[in-house]
Image (cartoon, rainbow, N blue to C red; front, side, top):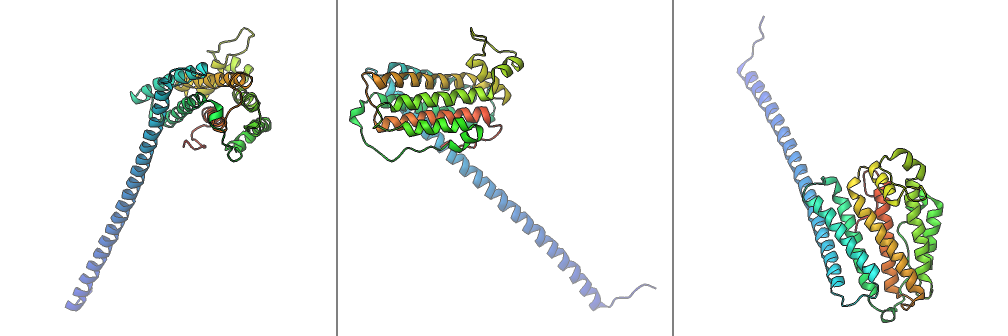
Length: 298
């Protein structure tokens, strides 16, 4: 027998159904509002990150262009080898950046372009600093510290010790500061390459390897091998130019220690340290890091 409803029961049932519908609609609308709020927050966060990135890119580009313009305007060069090397590095960076901006390189290269720009700017700024005689800037600042010791220690205790020795030697009171620093730093860079690209491994696994007269893989081959392992082949030219620039720097500083340049100022030693330390960071990033950058690009 069918159940009977009176008018009051019927109205109550209708109200119950309408209340359920309103509750469902309100819940859905709240979910939509929450979703839209999260989307808006994500868009705002992304746009803020883009603005910060663009501001940093503009600042870095301005820093680089200013340093190169100043370098090109020098009437004479006290350190012509270092200055010429810095300009060649800048040209190598421009070639890399042009390939990226033209779309030849994908977006994954964006961070590497930023690092390359920093390297070129550091090189040009140091070259500019060397044009000023050391006697004009003898300020003795706080003790020089390092930001990369932990990462080096994870790779090799010897690397960490060499770098600590390099930092310890950087004092304007040390007449051989530049030579000591450059000798230890050079070994750090060479070991970073060799540890990641041992001779036998490169000869066995890299079909494009080129050998020296001694039958060892060239440094360029080792660089190409490392970058190929990490799918960063397009960085080979700049990376080689960057290492060449630092090696030229070591040679110039070693000669200047006992030549007419005499000792270096605190400011010059700081710029030397920044140039070398950031070059080690760059090499670590392209050689040892798989997907992400763990050191700040600032």
